Image (cartoon, rainbow, N blue to C red; front, side, top):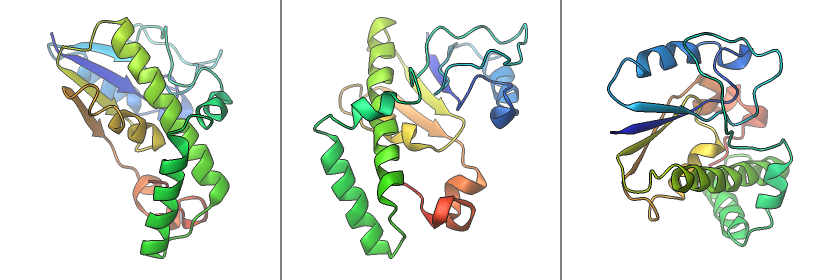
Length: 173
């Protein structure tokens, strides 16, 4: 049976992801398994809904989990690539924002790998569906050779696409 890893910023129905519940309601009507993977742990006051099950795993164990991911050898090539890309496009390069984004990407990669392996999804049809086009999408992209059956789908919002709607005009990756 195909599986959709539904990745939101926070638990569906939280203020920042208030429309993600609509996506979830649509996804569960189809003949596939849906696993909710918020990037952050659900807040204590997160709205609950009988249609949306509780979450047993999230991509970022804590807000500081990305710091340890930055110590991985893969961080330096990503930082170099990001700096060169920004210079080639005359886009602003915000060093600390780039580091934060790389940490999120590497931590998401590690968490997605762990989820795929622990749930036995390594050989079944698998889609990672992201509600936000965040650096976590890059983390999934980094798994493309390890899990060639993994497909990645993401939504785009204004701040994901237009530099003038993002922090300092910088769009990581």
